[in-house]
Length: 426
DNA sequence: TCTGGGGTCCTAGGACCC
DNA sequence: TCTGGGGTCCTAGGACCC
Image (cartoon, rainbow, N blue to C red; front, top):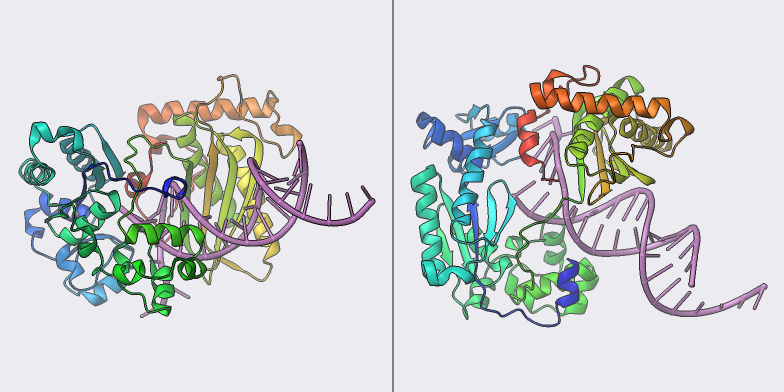
């Protein structure tokens, strides 16, 4: 994190308090709320793939992202439920609203997770732990959902405390007790330590945060890189300079589709890319945030993935133009890997997003050939087609009209409602 | 038996400019 | 002409998070 690296020379000890709040097994909890007969039972949201598992299911080892079949093997009595996506959005928003009632300084991390800074409102509501208690009480009483909260002086520690508090708990790390709390915990609880870093740290015998804290910084950086080494060393001593960021804009937008296993031929990838481009470009247009860099990702049958990207001189947000650029990139990937006959996933992402779109007169344009220059008959026609489709969808919904008839019907494909939940606000 | 989908950040090499 | 240094942008790949 750039800011941490720049400002890391001094500690941030300003007496701030950061509750981190995290709704427990969120989607599954909502399903158990909506259908009381599911309470106390192992359930999984999803089908082909588990999108979320209840605590009763987690006991059996069922996890999000797991193939449905594997989950059923682990837990034969597992109940699969379809998923009430609009309810997740509504209840997630409502929980955040409870935080908003205490302080305006709220940083939402995802649909079910947020940080709050309550330093400015303790005179109204009491000490942080009291505020956290009331938040939990209200979410339980008004929404019927369990929520875990960690309270600490830094974001990182509050986040860890909220993990320790699960399920349905509250953990307060009193000032002065931070290091003794932190140093006995496993490194895997830290932000930024995933499977790869865990394995590397294990090579030098580091398994707890305390052991990490006592590791020579040079050795650490050689092991996991400069930025990660600096960051983890700082966090291990509870030096976390990050402030809450209440308004973060997205820096990229993308869409992907797992295909199972399909031949790498135009008949397969052209319509899929058009559908993905449509998803991405319509989001960009809705917020008028065209982007200059287009990246595609192709995953082969053996799960090895390759990316190709191009940065244009002018930002784009037109569906067909994005699709055509993506197509050229994918053809480049396939040409470079002639031995690969099957693909298992395609993705499109657009980055270098404009902060604010230029004047509407700035028509979408690409650089790959003449026909895409602005003002050309074809460019204008496409621009008009996008606008028309956007308008129809505004009135009648996204299914009402579209390019071609491609449904992303891969065996592991996920409902549109779930995709939309994961989309970050542009 | 091969993990879905939407994101962010970091690294390292090369191009290019001053 | 040769050598060296710094900064920025681009590309490809990796790791991680929810």
